[in-house]
Image 1 (cartoon, rainbow, N blue to C red):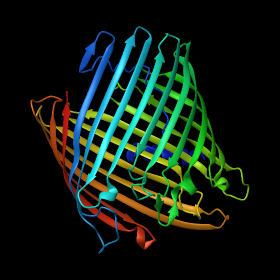
Image 2: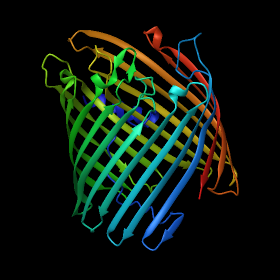
Image 3: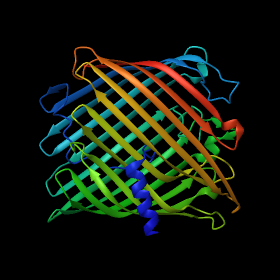
Image 4: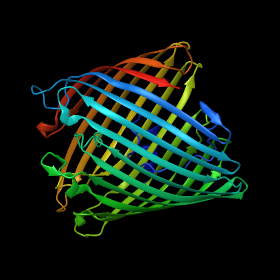
Length: 408
């Protein structure tokens, strides 16, 4: 087990992947969003952003197999805003995001997505209680496995507290309730996603903290999750995750966040085999020569599979991104992602190994009107591909589109 943990930690520092879908982090106690607010009136601050992004041609809208691709013109109009109240020890932030995804020909792919999150903190020195309430409605593709724009909502709420013990030591505890609810009639690969994946989870976390620097903290603790499915109780499980790692605040110039541990997925039905093994997620961001930002991230974690034969899959992979700022007007972005989905144990206990692979490469050139961090226009190209033993899941796709961001 020790060698497996070490290999996973090394992998996370060298390779990268998208952040885990259910990554759970409390509010950053050192964050001061009011300082960079574009508008502030007394204790109230506001940060609005308007974007027209992904405007261009998608040559494989439905990620069809080679020879049956369908092309369309697409674009996304989005508005995000952060409104906050900061009065002495009290900090309340409200973050809202709304997007309209448009397709010219395939109108079935159009959607209006949105999300709202409210966070309240009391920064009382040695004690910091906090609470958060959120809700998101989206039609984005549900990760690498579910390759469809299926409508769903994800309500969450969580509470927690940090306690400083002195000598750079502290403890934290939190509770979170979350749910996944697919819209009626949403299907993928002939499977009713609501029937298979709708569930509610209750999670409890407790861990200790050791402050290493002003921006970096070492952590170690345990998480317990109780997952119950609405229509597929054979998938119910009680999961335990023992972990350790590092956390960096948003103000850190070397943003290193790493969590590595051992997870056990214990299904309530003893005939169903659950996941047991290393689960980890991590990312690091740093500056090179004051003009280039590099980011690496990685993960290994189990995910809930929609497939009727498999209770879970293991996703691992990585992401690398470089952001070069030539001057206050021009920037250039390169990024690459790779992910592997590994299937093995079925609901009946039979081992049926399968491996799906996805990769994506992209680049973007941007220009800032007026310089600094103002209005930005970018042109982006992206190529993605997937390889699977299931021929119907194989595809390749390229997109070229523009992005327009207005900050006011």
